[in-house]
Image 1 (cartoon, helix red, strand yellow):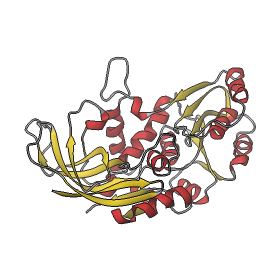
Image 2 (image 1 turned 90 degrees about the vertical axis):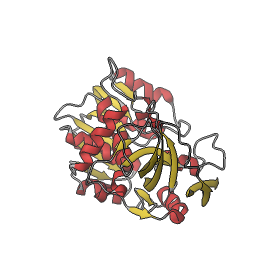
Image 3 (image 1 turned 180 degrees about the vertical axis):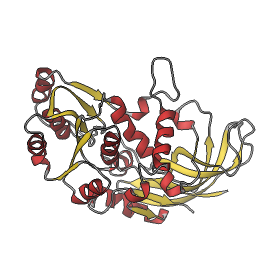
Image 4 (image 1 turned 90 degrees about the horizontal axis):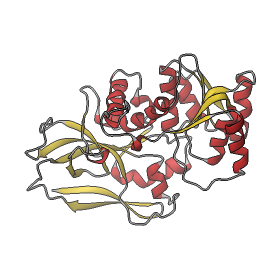
Length: 337
């Protein structure tokens, strides 16, 4: 069966290629999935497309969250039927032979709830990632939370903290991101240059700072800001994945952690166990179930957040837009139909 797929051939260069997929002699837990939509990650994928992280080698196939219909399945794949719309972690392609052994997040399928369109449903992975921020913290109703960075994960984290009863101050230098956050109901949104963000938070909290500071960017300067604005005994949540060398004096960062007795926590969805385990209530499957529930109820409305729905041939332009034109590009979904 002929399949289209994306391949990064060199830094910043993306091509659509074709290959023949063998759809016969499936293993018991394999499925052939006809993709309808796949979302581009503005973090993980951009780091590969533009070689932002050391060690990237080309060519490489990008990919993240995909939505498709099962058109063929192995005899041992239970709980799913031909025609089911499913979500899985896979490369950007029109057809995929997928091993659904269910032993890790990388070989797991999730049914898409009825009523969610494939394009909107592909957004579920971003919500599931953002959930790890509030879940890693000890947020209480009435807490003040500063979220630095309103890319997809930061925006969703801000909304999720609001859902948990916190009052959020969300900050980003890109005005369109701030306008969107405000329109979606974030309490306080500040569009200002990065160097003015700490002063803005302290002014808005009468010099007290916040209970929880959230880095949703993954840059050393942003981590330092989150630490600066967090009040004594508070929490700092590292929701962004650092990909660049640290800039600055580490003593200036560690000292306020020590002096204010801050609790600094990493928040990485990939580290969660797949299923509920003894002593660990949080898990990968639960994140996705909660994310789908939030989207189905429209408490998180993906249609209002997705900025571009494109064809595969427009992928290179979209990657460049996400990297260099953040005023207009915020969330891109590839439509394979």
